[in-house]
Image (cartoon, rainbow, N blue to C red; front, side, top):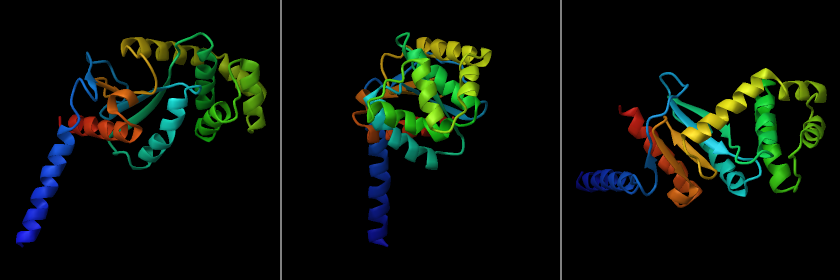
Length: 204
């Protein structure tokens, strides 16, 4: 019994220290509250760019986290648009989302750009790529140029500006907190910081 009590004390104490390791202003920063679209769920936004090697490295961590993320969390990707040519991939992301095939192609686009050294920074190049991966070219181009995608891109730009995103990958939790790889120190820590902030919001 004594050994059990010691173990429980150490476990609880280490959990406390673990949480205390993540501090505001160092591992994450608090924002002016931003509106969310997740209703009663905690919204987690990942700002990313397909051409970003850091985002590519972070993707396996996000993919694994999504399998075990809390049920009260709504995860949303937001393609960052820091330059005009980045909009091609942002529009492609939303077009493929509307077509219901983004989960099949998200990783493939990352791989093609970061490992295959493909540019995919023009509509023709992106259309060629998705066609080779089983997507109807004509339907993709139609969706790419649609009013719906126009609105999604405008909303992504608005969010990027509102959250004052300086680089990617960046993660926002419930419109209140912002963190990233450089703040967290590693991608593994970034996931832990995300979970820490989700836990904070879950206790509200």
